[in-house]
Length: 139
Image (cartoon, rainbow, N blue to C red; front, side, top):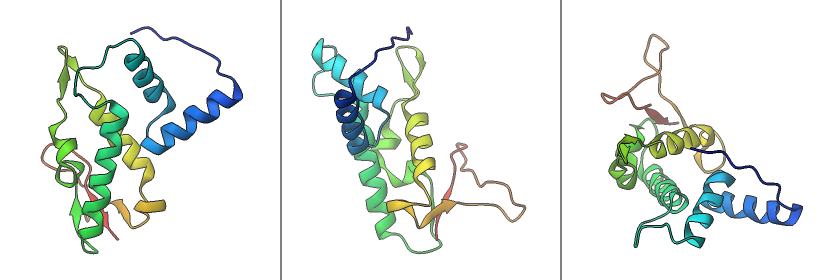
């Protein structure tokens, strides 16, 4: 994959950043989405990565709202959309799940996810699910 660099004006950078925050994605994800739309490269009816991310975070928020203190979960159980993301795209590993998981990990402990933390085993090691996903706890 080729890296392309550009230098937006201050106003364009502000607008891209605001829109990316609305979808809870990195500005680069949003720019790729916009360019794919502009050049007609989106699959008909397919959600963009930004839209998928927004939907997943909404599902996670709903899941957490209904959970009790002490409950544990991973992203696969908290979001049907996350669970349905293909692990392979065009014969290569898909990074979408990993990006969303890392984004969620950065969000825990503050804002909407202030009552979420990583779950730990009694020996102090991180709890992982059978598929090696991080386990979170409602605190």
